[in-house]
Image 1 (cartoon, helix red, strand yellow):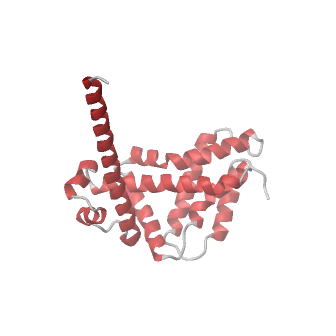
Image 2 (cartoon, one colour):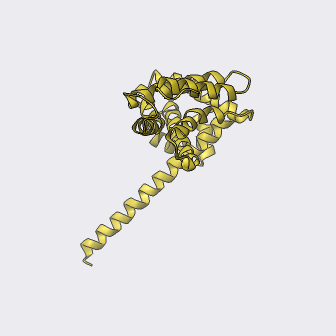
Image 3 (cartoon, rainbow, N blue to C red):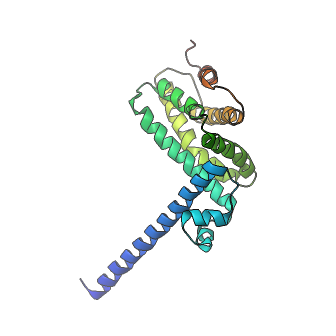
Amino acid sequence: MSRAEERAVERSVAVQRSRSRVENQIRAILDAAHRLVEAKGDAFTTQELAKEAGVALQTFYRYFASKDELLLAVISDGLSDACRQMTVTADDLTDPLQRLRFFITASLGGRSRDPERYTLAQFIVATHWRLHRVFPKELAEADRPLVDLIHTEIRAAADAGLVTSTDTEQDAWFIVELTRSVYHHYAYAAGTVAEVQEQLWQFCLRALGGPLR
């Protein structure tokens, strides 16, 4: 190997190390933000966040221009993770309607009486609507994993002749918006959501032209 090639390898290793360090710092900040959100919603300062993440405050601002940008990343990161978990959980479901039902109702089923889970739900509700005024395009992109998840199953059900949806992508978007509205209501309302889960599913199924009970 020539000296020029050796220098190229050294630069490549240095770049990889730098990239890995950046990824680790961003992951530490996001993980710290998730912990703080579960404990106290968005009522934390950037100084508290930096301390929780174990990074300098200037490191935080190197990656996020503001606390709102961080909260946007937290919502996006949390939804992506939830979609991955739902996909794994639904792996044994082979019927597209069963999978669709699970994906539509799972967010409501995740609500529990654990105070931290209520805090998280209320954070998502309040922060999502506030950030929507500032980052509408970014929030739409953050929602994309769930829309894609729902869309895949609607299309599979339509291909199998189980529903009569003629615009599967648009229907997926409407269902996600409806599901979010129901989630937002029950983030603050008391009581069980088991009955509402079934009502939500039956409403969506009828809207897609699926079989009635």
